[in-house]
Length: 118
Image (cartoon, rainbow, N blue to C red; front, side, top):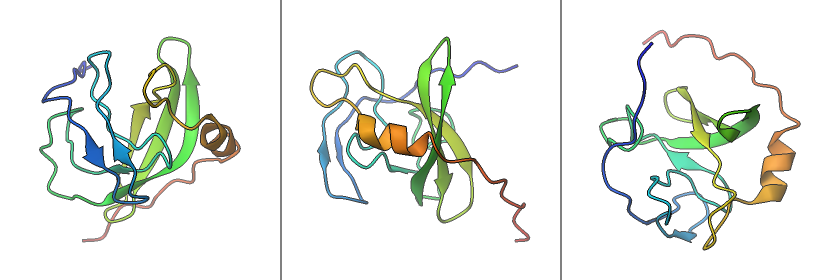
């Protein structure tokens, strides 16, 4: 099993879904989703590498809980259907993730996406 490590730089960004200006995380991790609406962009192949050519919006569709990592946001790309997971940032003192949105997502069940026929 391949172990993923965060690569790249920890930079801020403006959310393309809601317009929030998102500051980088202070704990050394790379923030890859908006703390307000929880949307992200499909820009990574591996966390932080910015090597994906898709660039579609990653919609938060559910959350999972891991005893090791805590709350994990499940995203589905609106452009290509890719499903990925990102650790929630609930302990960021500048801008922790929207807890109400996480609770709302916890009610969702993840529907499988059929493979693309392209």
